[in-house]
Length: 323
Image 1 (cartoon, one colour):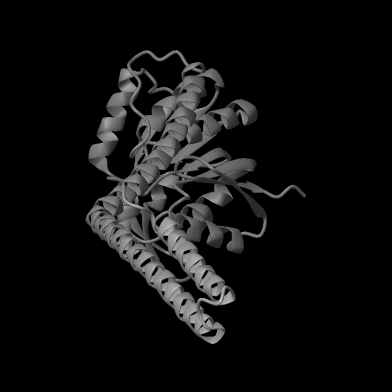
Image 2: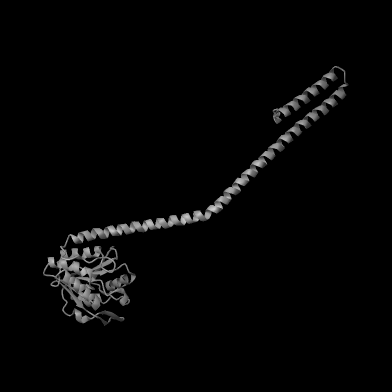
């Protein structure tokens, strides 16, 4: 049997009370009941009806409260479950966030590396188009010069056509510079090398490429040279005695391991031996130490000016100011 709704119970109670009051009042009007008694009885019946309606309404309200309480309890259980799930997921979410950051940083590094590799490949292709090697070419980058700075050196040689190119250090770059020196003859490349073992390796490369007529690997052991502020370990100055009218100077040695500002003496010792239109290139200028000695060169030699090239390892280019 279908239960009677609370709304209908209230209506029935109100209607019954109204009918009862109306009946009593009718009996009073007909004289069956004394008027005062009829009014009193009507009031009692009306009050009873109101009480019944109020009780029904309270019962309805109580049932609604109980139902709402149950719904709130279920909602609270769900929220507790969600909170518990969120807490259990937090370590995973934190790890995922960390992994995303790592991947993002890796992608940025990969993008930079890819761009750098493309630039070096492009420079290498330009270099290979300039020469016809007679033996396999030695590798570039790493300890050796990068293709971008080597391309700049060879472009300078083609433009300036220097008669004497001096390289502080020797290796792969000596071969590339030697091939181009052949093309702009008469030109000669002299490489100052302090390490006798490495000098032998470089000479073997020169022989393999048949460049002995244009490239000289000159052994110049390290010796003390006294500057204005301190003593430096640099190439023996006796190896410089016949150097004059240098058109291109590539400062790529001695290596950093020799000591702080190991390449500093190159400017005070070789600038006086350079031609007026000489170009001086300092490699590895991205290193703080090279940047510092470059700044010293610029401060101590007011007649030179500097250009900064954004190459793989950085390069600073010095020329005399035009009068």
